[in-house]
Image (cartoon, rainbow, N blue to C red; front, side, top):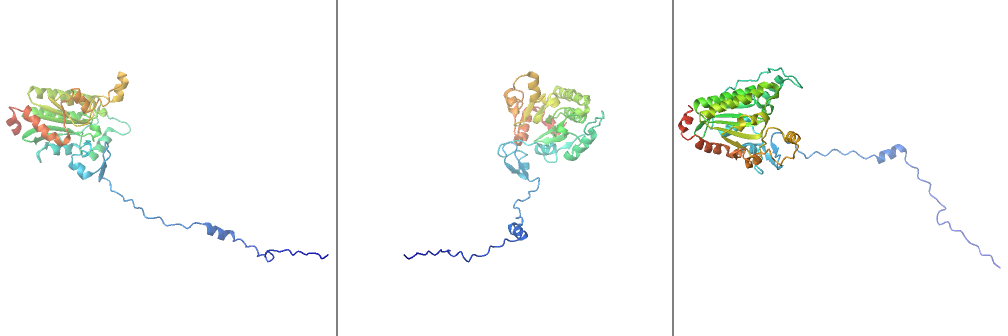
Amino acid sequence: MATTSFTKKTLGLENAEPAVTPPPAESQANFLKKPKLAAAPSRKRDIPEGLWTKCKKCGVMMYDKELDDNLKVCPKCQYHFPIAARERIHALVETCSFEESDASMESVDVLRFTGASSYTAKLEQYKKITHLKDAVCTGIGRMGHYRVALGVMDFGFLGGSMGSVVGERLTRLIEAATDKGLPAIIISASGGARMYEGMFSLMQLAKTCGALAYHAKAKLPYISVLTNPTMAGVMASFAAVGDLILAEPGAMIGFAGPRVIESTTQSELPPGFQTAEFLLDHGLIDAIVPRGEMKARLCSYLDYLMVGREQLAALGG
C-alpha cells in the first residue's frame, strides 16, 4: 500500500524580515516635543481711566462727559452721584456771580491729634485731592433775580465733617445774610462732627444754630438742602432747622447708622427708614427735588418766602 506524504506550508514566513531597530532616545524625545507657538496678539484694548463710569444702582456704563453734563445724575435710573462743592455752586448760581468768602481760613491741629497719621497730614492730603482748604465753600451769589448767601459742603474733604472752620465759615455766612437782608441756603453733605477736633467741633452745633436763630428773628428765610449723606452732628444742628428742608432723591439722612440704632433699641427697623423718601412720608422733610430741578425750585420757593423783600435781596442790602 502506497504511503501518503504531506508537505508543510510555511505561508511565506520562511523569509522573515529583520526586526526594526528603535530610534535612539534623543530622537524620540525630539519627535514627541511640541513646537512652541508664538503668542497671538491680544485683542483687548486698554481703555484710559476717567472716560467711563458704571452706575452703582443700575449698572449702566456712562461716558464721563455726558455724566458731567447731566450734573452727575444717571440718565437711566436717576441715581445721584456725589458732586463736588464747586460743581454744585456753578450749577446753581448765575455765571461769574459767586463771591467766595473766608477762602483762606484753614483748620488748626489744636489737640495735636495722632493716630495712623496726624490730623495735619490728613488735612494736607485732602487739600490736594479736593483743591479746597476745608469741607465747605461759602459766599454770596445771584440765583435768578435774588442774591443769596450760599454754603455748600463737600463730602470729599474728610467725609464733609464739621470742624471749627466749617462752623465758623457757615456762621459768618449766616451773619452776613442777616446784615444784608439775604436769604440763606446751605447744602449739606456730611458724616457729622470732626473727631480730630474733639469738643471744638461739637461747639459748632450750637454756634451755627445760634446764628440761624438771629437770622429767623430778622424774618429772613433759610432753606436747608440735604444730600447723600447728611448724618450725625450736621443733621442734629443747622441742617434740620430750615424754614424749608429739601432733599435729593435717595439721600441717606439721620443721626446714627442703622446698626447702632438696632443694637440700641433692640428692634427691627423698617426698610429704607433713613432715606429721603421715607422721611418725606413721615413729615421730616418738605420736598424731594432732583438735582437738575434744584435751581428752578429754589427760585420758586424764594419768590414765596421773600415777598416784600425782593428789592432788598436783589440789591444785596
